[in-house]
Length: 280
Length: 187
Image (cartoon, rainbow over all chains, first blue to last red; front, side):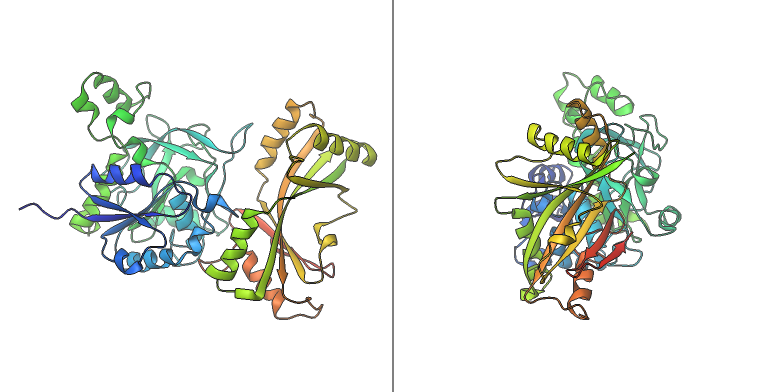
């Protein structure tokens, strides 16, 4: 008898565009996944074991990225499910929705304590896309419990508003102390940095992903679904994963293996199956 | 010698972004008919090392000869000296303006780069604001204690259900009222 695969709802808001590849990446890592429309029946949403808010441009980023989607009733339903301990991962636009909703960092639940501001980059402005190197700063989250602390995961970013900021005094220190900073932009060999382009948007404390205090809700700007298989990793990428990709040239089986972003999907699976990822 | 010029840009065609924001206020946030109109303008503040007349003429020329600020097929533009005009001057008696800007004006750097490419390297700074003009069903009296607090509340996002136009962690906001008063909500 095979164990039931955890069911994850990938919630699609109007204007999102990463739901299908996110669903495929989840399926490839032992999860059962459906794309769930934002205006679907919420009683059906309750049947899922976890939720992913994917990337894209919900409501065309009108007013501010994630601002209008955060007002949709489905978000309240996801919030209630997260309160019961189910995992929620917001990727890029999904992360913007989670911050605009006050789910993350959630030290005061429901209060908006952070923002994702426009990128700050030397001599340029606007949308920016590149491979980043994300150092795992905490493994106490549903997005990193299968990773090792300090591990460097190459994952691409693609956004115009991805700079984690806060006007709340002492919040960054508190996030650090509580272990809520999940991923940090780093050099290819590790070591968080504020230096462009390794920190691609000027994010405070080089933050690439933040969780709520419990670790079951994570807002991350990089797109793990775009590095979920080894074949997605560029051959020229520096570091361990680039070498793995080069070594796998011509080997279809090796190229089809899990990539660095796959660790996020595997973490989500483990978090559901083992409860809190097997951690107390 | 330095002169600041304001460039107010609105759409001639229906503004879908304003429509979505109004729908969010009325339906998603439950304000119903309290807000019956919403218009949006983009406001650029350009600073020149030049006299007023020259700065105004340079801005008019930039609008007419480049597409950096506006497309004449769908936008309308007004150019004003910054110390002679505010977006509050154009308010109707039933309107208030919520003026939002990204803190530090990160769009300004990209605009300065673009301006330099078209030969306007003499623009010293560029700041972008978005002006949301919210309309209520009746004129707002000067001594109003009910509508104005609601407008201030929808201006700044503090929770999932409260506020829309400004995230106070990344943006600034001020409200302009039809009788000329200005309130800074998020400095």
